[in-house]
Length: 216
Image (cartoon, rainbow, N blue to C red):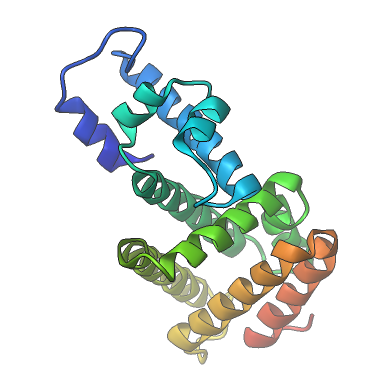
């Protein structure tokens, strides 16, 4: 996780115990600790309203320690996008490893649509997307992240077709585009209607089933 930052940190001289931990595992734990604090701040206050002092306090580290890992809030966003990419990729894999039944899909996605943590993830995604509309660098990161996820989704559809689980007549690109758009739309609704998570999950499966030619 956050591989690019790990590589950058390895090239720098280790700090004292009060700064950056020397042990690689401890360093990764500190990175996760900071990202968790930043995530909470961005969800509660928004990106621009969250100060570095608030982020460091939420993470339980000093401002100086925060800067040792992430010199800017944009660097924090880049790391959070990478984490979100990994999480989303795992979710796609879980969905396409199921039997694609309503029960299977619900089980794979309930961590997003039926939990408080899942709603926080949806809010954070919306906040980062909003920043992408103002910040070209963030927009570029988001485009590359979406391209990577779409490639994974297309491969998953092709594998399902090869295994006889999905009709070979379907166009993997068209199916992937539709499912991606539907998921993003459902996630947008979920941001301001968290109590509707279960019904939104049902609506997503309805669209997925229709796209794959299955009965909802």
